[in-house]
Image (cartoon, rainbow, N blue to C red; front, side, top):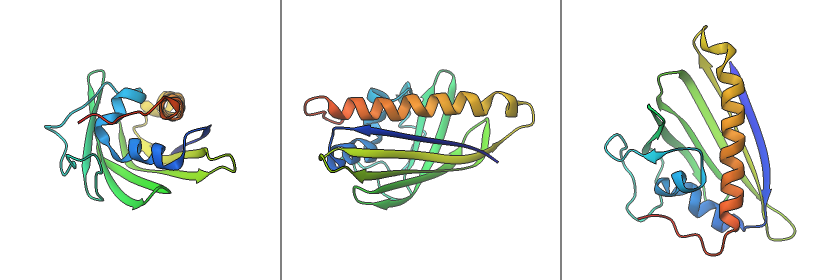
Length: 151
């Protein structure tokens, strides 16, 4: 089992960070993901508040991967599992939000997964860097004036 564990802090409130996390359409704006693939997704909320069970499919380069939301605790926790991914299996991730004393948010994003024997030499390093960039992108984007999720 491989893991990644990223913690970043933003001056944005947990409410702002949460709105971005639960709206799959916003992810390509602040993450390293290229696009949301709506035709391969299921159960997306048109209002931008995807529910547990929704499958979000994202494209990164030529690869499309899907993740199923498994747990939501308003403004505190978003958890998901891999629904489909050509390079990973048994993927589980959690994003925990903790308010700071100065009205900001600590974003703790961590996960575990398995991969093929061949990819075990490349995937852990790649995914750690990718997820750090994604978490940092979320933190910085949330600090911009009034970020509005895509519709």
